[in-house]
Image (cartoon, rainbow, N blue to C red; front, side, top):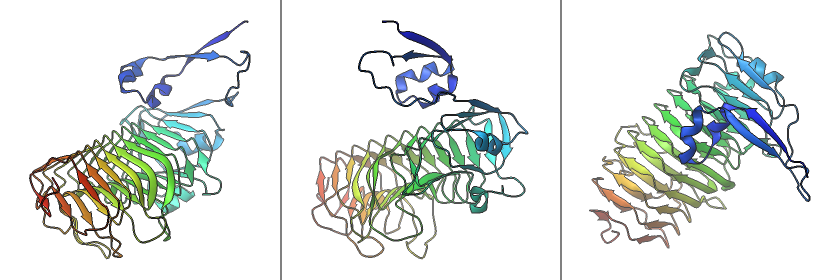
Length: 374
């Protein structure tokens, strides 16, 4: 049996490695690809036979490269500032820069596409019935857009990695009507709303939808209104993030709709000193000093987090806080366990709505309200 071996020079592939121990290989350029299609019984995944690498230099249009790309292609963006809005509707497209020296920011006029009209930086857009799948965005800086930096709507398996979203008018990055998203090892700072925002849909009411294992991990989230917001979703994990200097660290938001928001994991995050002040809105009181807040959530597991020095006088201030939702729905069946909390005021652990069947086990803290939760 003759095996075929092929050496492919492809540095950007390393941008999407999950294993932290392999990050030191990012400077290497060789990826060994073994073609096993001739092995007996082998069933290879579909391969893009004519994948193309498009290189965009300063002064050239990223959107023009996207428009000419086919599924499986890679758009490499060289260092420089690109002033445009990028609309992606093609499956299996990779958009990759070289880090914060590859900058996307608004032009004098928005680009003549749906993303420009919406005021976002990068848009990946499909529908709930026909999602755009497997789009990868990496090693860029997206800054200064009036709405969201990076926004997915109607996507499946969208990945945002090693990317900075900064000083955008609403969300740094996020998605709606989407499944199996991955937001890993990013920096999202100084955005007017959330660093990372995930929702069932942004413009309609309704029960929580299944995010099918969407992951928010290893991100640095600071200077936003809220570090992470998860609204009306199920089956999602927020883990290993560093969240500080926001008005609130993590918000898990549900309501009375069926199914309830929940079946989520919030674990092993460092959430500290989120003490900025954000004014009240028509739906929420002012926010300050809120670490991890559950409001109207069900079946969420808050486990193994370090929550320190979140201090404020808002009704939602404190380390880990259970708070009745804006429509009066209580938290239910949530498990708060093995968290370490200190220096949060008015309390490290506060159960302020006393919903049914919430459990508090093996937490380490100095003060809880009511007492006995530590």
